[in-house]
Amino acid sequence: MICRVSLPKVIKLPLYQVDAFASSVFQGNPAAVCPLDVWLDDDVLQQIAAENNLSETAFFVESHGVFHIRWFTPTVEVDLCGHATLASAYVLFEELGFEADTLVFQSKSGELQVSKNNDKLVLNLPKQTPIACDIPKPVQQAFGDSIKACLQAEDYIVVLTSETAVLRANPDMALLQQLDLRGVAITAVSQDYDFISRFFAPNCGIDEDPVTGSSFTQLAPYWAEVLGSDKLRAKQVSHRGGEVWCEVLTNRVDIAGYATLYFKGEISVSSTA
Image (cartoon, rainbow, N blue to C red; front, side, top):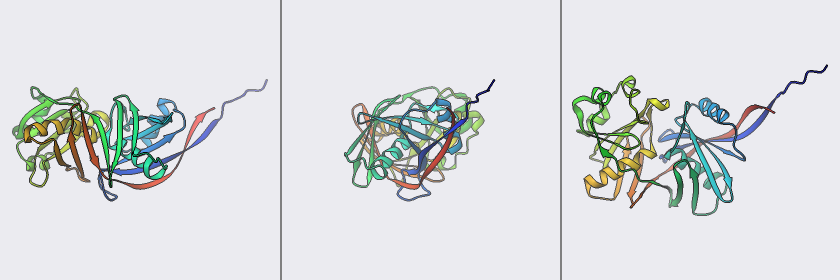
């Protein structure tokens, strides 16, 4: 009797790493982008994201001119990721020869569009207006007397008393991991920008995210109301840092920034045929 064993089949896939919300490498938020012809099993996608070990890896599949996109952190799939969408658009426009001025992505968060505006790419994302809430105990313990206000949407939005308080914050990730939402954005008005922010998401395997595009769908509506302007210039003041231009629309937020290619290559993934 002959025993037949299924042998691993090696699939070669293109992989790009793009620094999103950055005009030069080593700034902004690095995202991996992996174009696919067809969807792979979810556990394979998750393993690729874990191996990349970046805050997000984006995968997309084209169908009839629409790009279906998904995002994975090293530990979980997420419903929305702005910087990896910006990175995916950069790859399509600059590396894969997409010729139209606007890209359409379909995602778990609905339709997302990315367009060109001179050297910037503009994400059009659903607006999330945060509402005031009680300060969760872990947030109070993490940021203490520097808290001015606390709101929530997809994340907690914690307004601090000053720009210095945002820059100096050193929260205990074990505290933030107790929270029931995706993450925490801390923010304050700024001398050089309309506002600054930082973002922490230990529940998603990311202690501090360099630049979090989706957080500005919540931050921009808040600051637009406070500052009385629908057009805002912001900076996420992580170690790498990144500049973001926002425009608050009726039900959407335009989030614009630069992107730059760090590398492109090929990965080999084994699957059982």
